[in-house]
Image 1 (cartoon, rainbow, N blue to C red):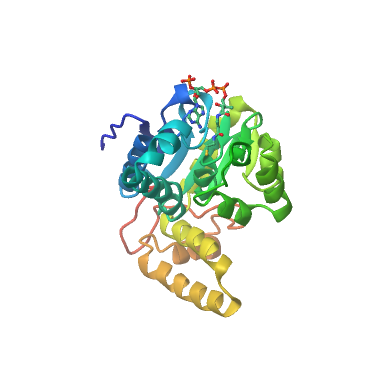
Image 2 (cartoon, protein in one colour):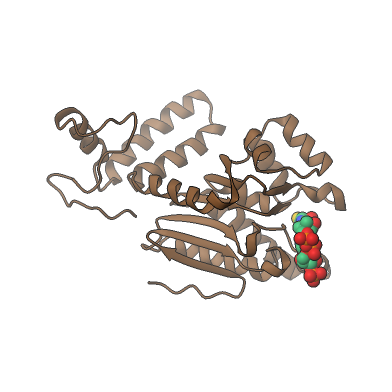
Length: 286
Ligand code: COA
């Protein structure tokens, strides 16, 4: 198993689930430049780590993240443009490009505070589940900056304009239920059930063919900005790419299990993996 040793990030891999933990609990996991460098490296490595099937982003000590570190990321870097550029590039890369395009499913697990810059990784993840009593806040307006990097953009893309404007302009805190109501997360659960809810979701994801799941999430993301003609074309070609790359031949296996073996109902569940006929069968969930 690969070793992940960082000062500001912990990585724990168990049964295919990679828990990536922002680890500055005494600062409510505020994100310093050093934390950004650690996260950028950890995620790059996890993307090709065969032990990691699903990546979960969370924070240590009961908080997701209090956003960018106001001292180390803002005040201290204001007089160091070279380091500021480097830190901002790493911060944006892992919080958006890496997670958004990640080849494996990603889940944000939110408890405690999720503030400001932390909305980037929250919304980059494919899924987000929060504790009912989590506290979300777009606090930027309360201390004189915009919801910068891509925060304003990804919030605007995720929720209806009225909700986006309300919370960005008021900087008012809201809880897990409200985050679910406005579409910022999938759902909220009591805090003592949060970890189990994350594990259950990850288990369901690991039952799908990784190739089909990857193509599905990429397709769902990319078609949003395409017109109808582009979407028809892209989806047809993407479908062919799945057939070419899918080592489990999910299409024929699924049809066989439903039509011939009458072994499952696709409406409710995934086909049984590891039963490929005439090829190398695999039960490897990655
Ligand atoms: N940047 C730097 N330091 C931060 C921080 C941040 N975003 N958020 C918390 N901290 C630090 C505090 O300065 C404090 O440090 P200290 O112990 O050296 O004094 C420590 O973390 C604990 O914070 P504290 O405010 O005492 O904890 P709390 O539980 O009472 O409140 C928050 C937590 C998150 C509500 C509060 O710290 C806060 O509002 N932070 C700012 C969040 C923010 O606006 N982030 C947007 C950045 S884009």
